[in-house]
Image (cartoon, rainbow, N blue to C red):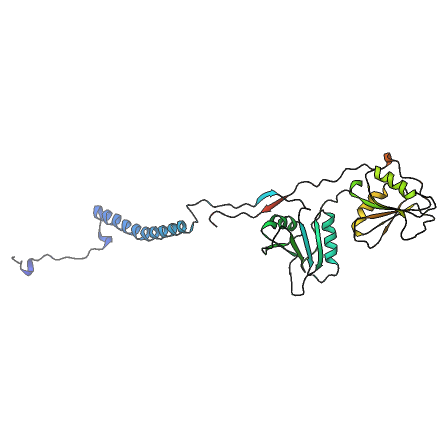
Length: 302
């Protein structure tokens, strides 16, 4: 290959962008814009692609969120299962008090006692249940704000309610009407000189729907010289005593320490007769409205 002499070789000089004009300047201006756009866009596109892939992988996008709602079902009857009630609170008599309130609300409290000293429940209560008693535990839980339920695999459908240090009170419920005569069992006792008065009054009350257990002279040998009648009752029978008092003008209520719902009607010397039925409120046995429980749902795939 022939080489040109040094003096004939081409020489080059770097030209600045500001020295360009016309079509050359426009060409290089477009080229710089394309390079700058590629420099900014490509990393952003790569980062965005990675972010979207991550979101898909973690389920943040691309799949419909699963909404898990509690399942509402009919609740069991309140008296269809037994409750063993224990008090771990240091408030004396709290267990008996709560048992009495639950009984008035138609729950079946089979036993009441104190929890072992090793048992400590910080919250309001813990309700223990087995597989057959879950619905019963959920129903009872609705009565005690803040109560927790715990499956301890016990057999049967009974539950154990342990009151804790955080217990305050049961949820507020409308006061049910007084029991109907057909729900009340009573004894009728005579303290007067009138022979057969207790049996006569008992027959009249039986005709009005009351259940009569015993009649005769007052076992306490009381003498009610100026009284019409005394109705004796315990904490469990207060509402029954109020219903019975509607039958007798001037009857007085007298509370004692009996543990049953049974009441005693003790006739005094001023007793003459029951009120006419037309002046006595007529009632029917109370039927509690149907209840529901909320079962926790289980999300699909869990």
